[in-house]
Length: 277
Image 1 (tube, rainbow, N blue to C red):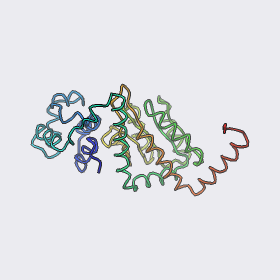
Image 2 (cartoon, one colour):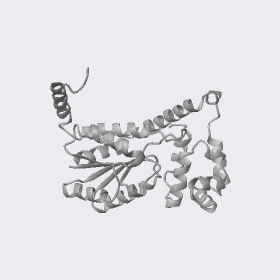
Image 3 (cartoon, helix red, strand yellow):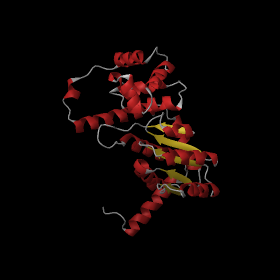
Image 4 (cartoon, one colour):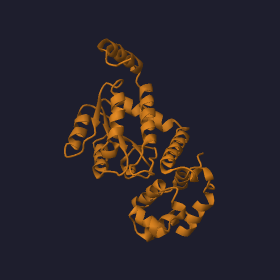
């Protein structure tokens, strides 16, 4: 098991039924995992956008006497600081944080069952709508680009607005059974609304999100977490991107003709001189 701050927090939260407000606090703590052991309850409340009493109730829900006891626990289990970390500049620290996110993802994938289930669901959906707005639009586009090489009908939903529900309806009418969503912070409200609508329309929602406590969790049938880096001005999403590629592999396992489609594409690409060797 990874000894990263985010991994320890995920373990701490597992098995607890949290309210939406408490999930918001948990999500904030995961994103600021390295800082949390040194934050006051007031500071954490401000970061999460909740009240200070909500932070106290959250600590009690986790089995602690109050927030000070929770913070003491986090300090006690924190690994000792190393001089190596102190010698890194801010860019190196951002890279190191992403390496930790990838290590945590590798350990999550030690149980391949959730990804394998997701692969079967998205392979069987004809068509397959792939949703990702704003910060997650590039993740959805990348997945859809490669998926279209082996899946017979991939529909990219990377623009919001009033037509988003119409496009979900069109996918359902065409026979879709599942929707794949990439959801990254900051989480657009219309993504949450779109997932709720998709489920009401009968679709099974599979979501790649930055945390199991992200706002989209309540509207997902299967959520696959992959943390984002927060050390730079804009979040970095190496782990969600890699998880998307892992999902592509699992989807191919559920498509008997995937290899034949790839070989057919290579033949056509060569005939057209599509790529420069």
